[in-house]
Image (cartoon, rainbow, N blue to C red; front, side):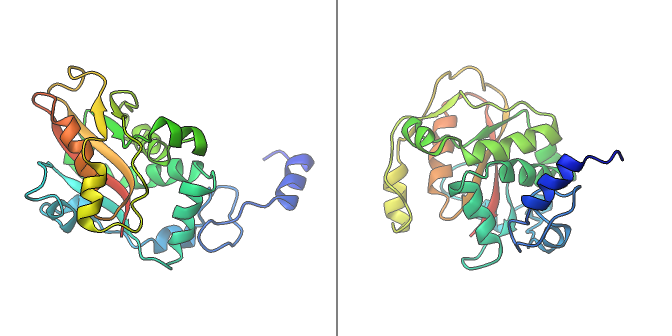
Length: 229
């Protein structure tokens, strides 16, 4: 490898730190050190049909398959990673984590064989304020590994709903009802869609997305989230 004193100087002055533990990462690592990558509390639900994630949607909306990459608890070391992804402009974390997760999704035919990937959209005002959609960046990573197209135009958020953080399950449902629409009801006909979001809590936002997507004939919908609370 050719020695580049300028690059080495930059690495020394602005070292890349793991977004979970804060330790230095190696040059072949990105945002997450190998130790933390190994320690991610994976669900492995992509390998299990009728898993707890899928059961969250039973009796609410028809979902073919559903999974989350890892378990998330408030105060855990991985909270910082999700916070950096969603609120600190560190969108590349979504890309990297999407890739890591998608490598494992390749082991499950139901997920590896989707036709296209749709991230949960932000309202234009929130997108403008944040500058990016974290779910879109997770979707980009998955798209690159599964080699499936990413659709960011068909499902749109038409209402800017208030924050859901302190709302009850029923209040979250009311808060998300009718906030998504399709810009084209024909483009997804007969397709198997993978709906992507960052964190699954009550699932009300994803349910609202599914309700909008169901306007399309013959659609099959699966769900992936990076984490489940």
